[in-house]
Image (cartoon, rainbow over all chains, first blue to last red; front, side):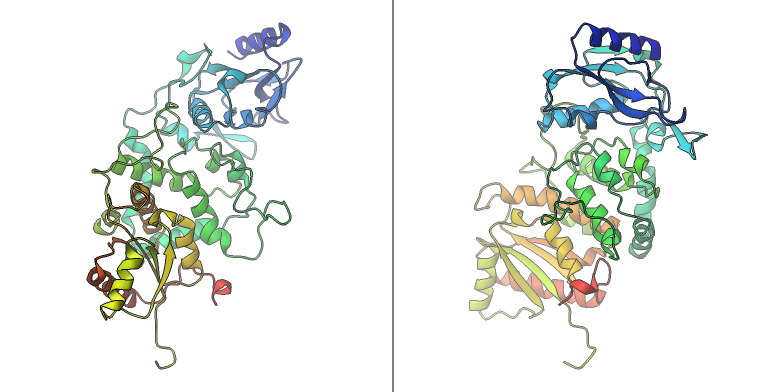
Length: 294
Length: 144
C-alpha cells in the first residue's frame, strides 16, 4: 500500500497536477513518522501503523499557497477535513484527497511499540472516508465495534462519582498540564488566529507560569470552544506529553449533544448546522435537565 | 455581620429587556430579595459568554444565575434559544468537572414577573448559603 501511495504521489508531482504532497515522512526512528510536505521526490514517504498525525490540520497552513496539494487522509482524518471545509478554513478545490485505509494506530512509548492501539482506535466508528477523490487500500480498514456507545464508557464512570471526587479527579489530571499548547496546536477545529489565551500586547503564546489557570480554566475553555465542532479525532490526547485524557472533556460534550439534541457527528457532512449554531424551538431541553438528573 | 460569617456572592446576569425589567419591577413593588445578588445587565441572555460564568467563579462568586426572556419572547427573536443550548452544555460540563449543581442556575423571567424574580433569587441564594463558600475554580489573586 505504501508503494502504491508513493507511486501515485510521484506520478502526480511529476506531471504537475499537484504542487506538493502532504504525507508522512520517515522519522529518526521507524516508530515516529512525522508529517511533511514533498515538492520533488517522495522517497522518504512512509505509511504504516505509526502514522498517527491528522494531516487535515496542515491543510490550513497551505490554504494561501499556490497550487494544489495532494493529501493522504485516514478515514477519521476526513471528518476533520470536512469540518475545516465547513468553516471555510480550507477550500476543496485546492486539495486532491487520497483516502487511505487504516488498520488502527499503534501506541508508541519511548520509541517502542507497546502492542496496544490508540484509545480512539479501540472505539473507532469512523471507518468510511467522508470526502475523497480517490481511495487506496480502503478495504484494510477494520471495523472495531458495532456499538457506538462503547466510547462513552469512561465518561459514564466519571459521571457516577460524586461532585467532590470528580473535582479531585480533574484537578489531578489538570495539574499535570505544563501548558505546552500542544493540544491547541494539534486540534483541527481549535484554530483562531487570535487565541483568547494569547497575550495581545506581546503577540506571543502564553506559557505556563506559577498560576492555577491551567488547572482551572485552560482545558475547560478549550473544550468549550470546540464543542459541537470536535470530531473526536483524539489528537489532543495523543499529543499530550503529560498524558492528560483530554478526549474525556470533548467526548462529554459529544455525549450531551447526542443525548439532548439528537445524534450529531461533526464533519460527517458540510451542510448540517452545528448543534450550538442551531436550535429547536419546541424540543430543546431546559438547562434544568442538568440539575434534575442523578 | 460578625467577622467570619459567610456571606455569599451571587452574580446574576439579567437580560436588558425582560429580566432586568423584572428586577426593576421587584424593586418598585417593594419585594425583598437578598442583597447578596449582584446584577449584571446584558443586552440579551445569549450575550453571556460561557467564559463570563467561569470568570465569575474565578473571581470568587459562590453562585451564578442567568436570567433571560421566556423562550419565544426574546427581544432579538432567537437569542435565548441559543442561550438554552449553550448554557445547558456549560452547566452539564461544570457538573462533570465537579462544580456543585446548586451553584449554577438559569431561569426565564419576564418583565412582568417581579414576584418570580424575587422568589427565584431568594431560593437560589438560600441554596448557595447551604452549599457554603465556593473554593473550586476560584483564584484568590483575582479576588477583590
